[in-house]
Length: 81
Image (cartoon, rainbow, N blue to C red):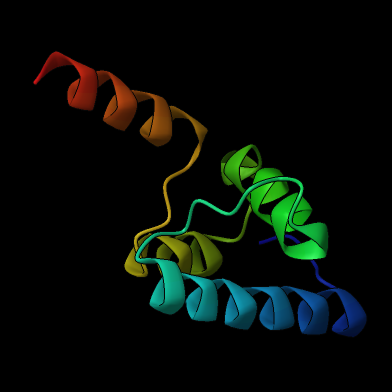
């Protein structure tokens, strides 16, 4: 389990809360990268799945978050229908 500093943990929790609010407002977790700190954070999470603590991965997945490979597969499925 990677060691996380208190400050880093607080930032992660803050962004996760913002992501949940975004999902409630927009119906998905597809935050545009240009959407400030939250957009950059989402981009980083998408590409860090293998480096994230499993509990964080589970929390993200639990709110409908798609990681990089998942997002590509979902897009492929949507275009095939």
